[in-house]
Amino acid sequence: MSPTQSLDEINRILDKFSDQIAEIKDQPAKVDEAFRKAAIAAAEVEGATFFGVAGAVAGAVYGAITEDDFTGYMQDNKEAIKKKIQELLDKLQGAVDGLKAPIAFLQTSEAWSTLKSKIGEAQNNEVVNGGVTGYWAGAAALKYTAARTLQDTALDSAKSTCDKMKDALAKMADAAYDFYSMIVKDIADLLVKLGSAIGKIATFVAAPFGVSDAIDVLGKVITSAVSYMDTLLHVLLTQREIINGIEESKEHQKGLHRNHWPRSTSDDFNINSPGSEWQAT
Image 1 (cartoon, one colour):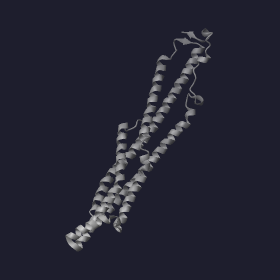
Image 2 (image 1 turned 90 degrees about the vertical axis):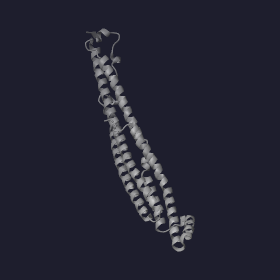
Image 3 (image 1 turned 90 degrees about the horizontal axis):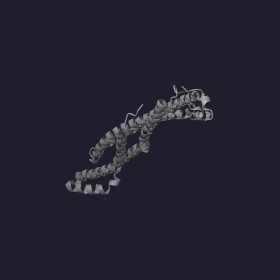
Image 4 (image 1 turned 120 degrees about the vertical axis):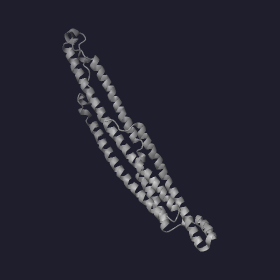
């Protein structure tokens, strides 16, 4: 199995996610600014009700001065929105910490693929140039052929291990890519809707609707983030078990007795009496 996504594509989605995290971190300041404007607008309305235009101006000044004292329902919900934003960032912290993992998975998968190619190249060279059948016979030739067969078997086992490692790591890379793609899509939607909600809050008149919208959309994305993280964790743990299984089975690789590469038979040949072991055919 080859990874579905290229390294460039994975880098693109991870860069986008990083940019979105930075934008989410900017949202509390925007919430504060929206409620500041709402406080000023509230004071303007109250001032105009009792004192007309002059009162509205005075009210706006008063609201700007006392914005931190904007208490009650609106103030409580300002903190609730900011708390939800922080909760979302906390839920996504694992994804932030793991940003380099998909790249490492893919690069390592490609490294195993390259290793398999090198092993195949060596094996093909041995197949083409290593045969003695039709040229030599005798005890030495039989020993050589047996050793050659064992070496070829070990090379097949090594290529099989490369395939297993490559596939497991490619699945990890794809699983991570799927996670970041889903969360990036949700965060993009969140930022649009949260921006709209914050805009409503700043008008004061539509502030209750903006508060409701903000808390609702943040709650939905938090739920999605938790679900996506659980799915990703399950996939990664499953693939880790596969890799651990490969590690544990190394001693049982066909052709690799006691986890050692089969030795050649050069030490078994008697160079002082080649005629007894080698016979030209």
